[in-house]
Image (cartoon, rainbow, N blue to C red; front, side, top):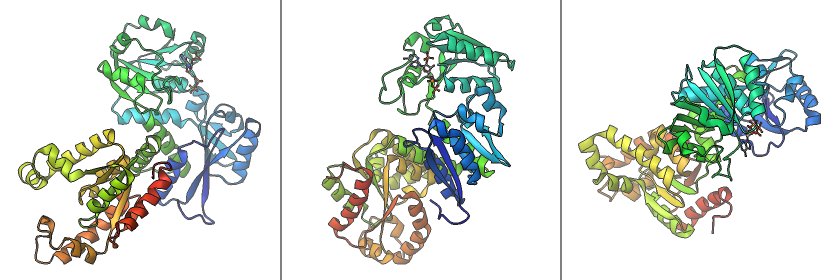
Length: 465
Ligand code: ATR
């Protein structure tokens, strides 16, 4: 969070409930990353107070607002202007400050559009199927129109709702044909290589086994499936798509980009991709939390000693990433470098980390000293677990490793100087990769493990024994 001072601008969220929103992770994360002096706060607003809240926000010089359930439609009555797309969709999720009031936008649709582009999906001329005909589905229909889809089948349990949307949108005559259909009639779709958007609430955690359409025959015709749900990460709908040979995506990036686009509108800036990627990691960590502990730091900082002790105390497993990579490759890391080259090693490292992220729980990771230096690896480590940077004075590190002849980096005339030089380069990168810094100048295991466990306990309340 930035320091709050006289110049701090307020941005926020109007909704009810708002307690579980992830938007502060996005907006405060971007402000922090860019050094922008604005703070994002959720506001719980009752329906009766909505108009007053918007007016009050304007009078309080609030820079911009997100709007969520149940106010996305009704808020339009309180706005100075409404962007054309938001008007057609009938829902506003972002208020942008203008002279005299706010202008409403729908960045949900824009966010989904940016997500599919990033994933290389084009709707141009395609046959699209949308499952559902609620508010979310309507935004997807409008996106299909703006992106030039050929034909859209709008399938819904309640046919009349699909019919109303189709009629509305067909009058816009943007070149896409919208065909409303009762869900049970899905067999009437003859086209193949469909792009399907799952826009119902079916399959949301904790009802992870539910799916609105379960016929495997249907999924054989699907080349791409996008679920507007992001929790669970891999819904039953997505599983059916991939099992039938298609590609499936959830909507966590839509959540990310609807926020990024709102932020860009409020601050009139472009958020660089580097920061967007960092925020995406933070979102994943919030939505799909992992219970692992990751130790990073220079050689001799105690990753193995403290890591093993910690695993034992916590009743967790211990995994040394270098040893794991050597096991996978069937040869020592030095040999991988020698025989296959550094590029190959880096690729292997990233592959291994991705696999570990997706499979390993309840584990203390001790990582290679060079591993977190690459940004992509640093991001993966944060997705794997909470990251602790074990720090020690250069002199202490030197004392710990000077007798060890297995450290090729230190096979030189003046190893102490080498340590100082490397640490100067590496310390800022380790700090950036870490959630918490832990001083290990003391070799007291109880003390060092105690510091880590204290922090880890605050994150995983009931896990510390
Ligand atoms: P949102 O604004 O998020 O789209 P919504 O407007 O409540 O939410 O829409 C929910 C969608 O999920 C609707 O298309 C709804 O179908 P109906 O219009 O027939 O209600 C669909 N949906 C909800 N429960 C369903 C179920 N058990 N089977 C099939 N569709 C369901």
